[in-house]
Amino acid sequence: MLNQLQLGDEATALGLILRHLASSSYRFTTPTPLTHSRVLAHRGEQMAANLWDVFGWNLPFKVATCDGMNRELLAAMRGAGVLQTRGEVLQSRVRVSSIGDDLFVHSAYPTTQDDAVFFGPDTYRFARFIQQALAADQSSGGSPLRLLDIGCGSGAGGIVTARALAKVTPSIALEVSMNDINSLALQYTAVNAAHANLAGITIRPALGNALRAVKGDFDLIISNPPYLADPAQRAYRHG
Image (cartoon, rainbow, N blue to C red; front, side):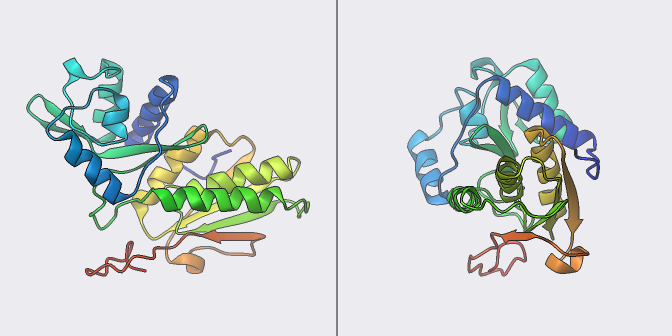
């Protein structure tokens, strides 16, 4: 139940992109930026051949030579404002990664923007840690069970946690507060949570600085904060 998240036109269009990719059995495991750069260097001037190249490796593409690219998907990309055009050459301004059957929209490569929404190997490690920790926790908790994800980014941590908690305690009502200082992150989180179809789970956005952005007590707080040493000391990157 995403009753606290209002999706605008661009976010709705992003959701259409995820639905299209899901129907195409799209899955992509995002590597480190260094691996990504090496793959791009190896591919040289190649155009994207398929949707995995477009939304995974972020390669430029031409509609006529990109398998799986159709009119509906292009319209959704335009509606979401994520289609960059240079004549006949197009490129996505976002990437899409997967954890299990869930898809997550996040920022394009390279993530150099001040408001870039990260997703990579550390996201997968964080998700595995959550899944392993909660699988071993058989406590019933109270009702409703309140969860807070500080610095949620794409929402991957909160969504993985909500799924794991629902599996361990299926009768407990879950309320998940997704916190970030980056409004773009909360937009992507809303899209990703809506696509995840977390039935019976309330998702609440919380824009602001960590605990200052929320009220009340929480049963579980998770966070995968930035740990980079960013020379520019950008707020969303600098740990």
